[in-house]
Image 1: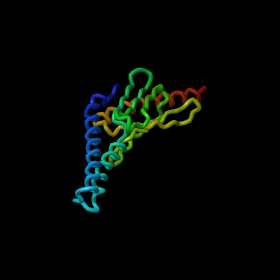
Image 2: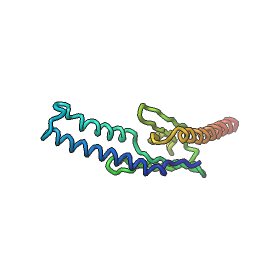
Image 3: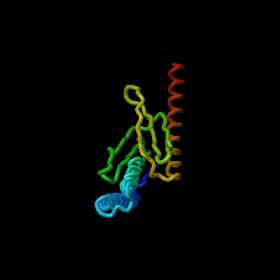
Image 4: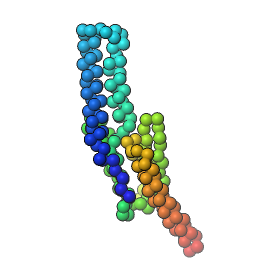
Length: 168
């Protein structure tokens, strides 16, 4: 199964550009407010606070572009940002399906995160984190369905393997 929201990149670019313009206009209005107009008085900080909160919101939402591919024998996850200024490290992970132990989707107030638990070569558990805030509910549901299928298959294989080692 393939899942991607890359086709929404122009919309995300527009939103980021709009917030950037609002921020620049807020800075200009703040400078004009404190140097010439004095309309807001001591409340001039609001001209900087609102655009800053919008930038903080976009930052907390995380990387907007998420791609998932479960075709074949490997799971591919890609999570990237469209703005280099706010860019957290772009994530690109590929690992065999049998390494997936479980996953968890956390819904915060303003963000959604996907935590994927996989086994390493030394049987340690590694947690991979992805931002899925920009996925719609149908896409999140499809992602959960696909991951559930892989986790269920892995549990059955591990259970069969354990049964075979006990009887041997």
